[in-house]
Length: 282
Ligand SMILES: [Ca+2]
Ligand SMILES: [Ca+2]
Image (tube, rainbow, N blue to C red):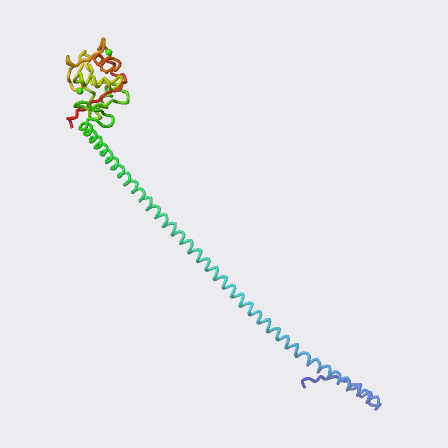
């Protein structure tokens, strides 16, 4: 039966002592006590092992549960890490692709802007050229209007009127030929003296000035710039003038009396000059 422990008793030992009734009885009692004691001892171990088994079972369950939780946690962590890595990888790939696309768009935009800038530069240059031409034309028109006004009014800035003409006295010094060209640029020519009144007036304007009289062919015949020759009643040579030779262009010297103030000088000499415009020539 469960829970019982069988004790081996030597029968010879029992038989050997049956001759002595008292001794045998005592021995039997000891044996029985011993058996009883062993049964008690066996019974004590049985009651102690059950909690131990229960505790072991509980610990095992806890360990299994912990292992299960750990494995699940580890699996979940691994899965989350993998998912996170995948997301990061996708995000990285996506970001790189977006950056490349933005770079391409930026390059396209820069190319377009560069082309637009070049076109704008070309248009601006064309516009500047057109405006420069318009400005030049406006300046030309302005000079023409000023010339007409000077001729009509007899005097304006830099010009002074006398009788039927208006005169310009230069602030610079140039050769006779350059001086004449300046007068032509102003719509005029070097002055031609037609009368004593005009001679007197011009004599008062400046110290030394070119007039429109020269001997261009060096034949000792002086001509006015309008093609006329010196007339006997309008001639105002200085003393011992003209000297001819290399002095083929004529000046008025205010240092001498107006009646004797013409001096021929080398045409390359730099002097002030007087331009004349006729008011009636509009
Ligand atoms: Ca004149
Ligand atoms: Ca001379």
